[in-house]
Amino acid sequence: MYPRNRLEALTDGIFAVAMTLLVLDLRIPDDAGRPTDEASLVRALLALAPKFLPYLLTFYVLGISWLSLIKVKSRSEMVGSAYAKWCLLYLLLVTLLPFSTLVMGRFTAYAAATAIYAANIGLSAGVGYRLMSLLPAPVKDEHWLDRRVSLVVLLVSCLLTIALSFLIPAQALWALALNLGAGTAARWYRRLETRG
Image 1 (cartoon, rainbow, N blue to C red):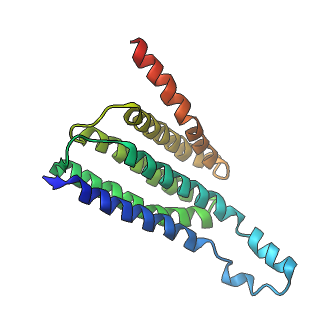
Image 2: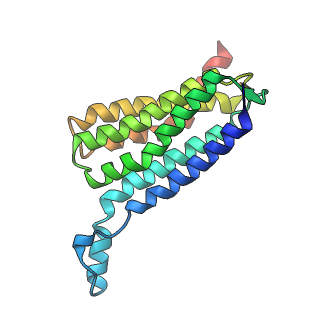
């Protein structure tokens, strides 16, 4: 058995570092030279545009994931070995997100870059879902259900992104916009559960 609060502290630290590392790729490329006037600075900043979407998307995914993690409650102060091991796998995938975001930002037009990025996020969602099933004595309130539904929506949108990356790589990331409807899907699912 492991103290749950120690895993939560590690999780908080890893999310903070991963979210901070994301910004390191947002720099003017060395080959752009030193901007000599306002116009060249604006051009250099505009050249960063392809990197902003993956950065913002990953920051959002990490932020929402962390917020939903802290809302899920358990009546137990201890977790078992299986939970601890799956938690470490989850955190490994979180630490890989800055790398897959960097690859996505630099090689936006390539299917492999999009697929790696979506696979990283999708695996995180799948492992996060597994963690929820291993959490001892969970409080199964609306946050519990919202987290489960949002993880399923995230996983489905990642699978769709991977498939689309081989057909239309430049637009495949838009499949992740399905996550904007995760809250609506959770409310719909809650209504279905209360009827059934």
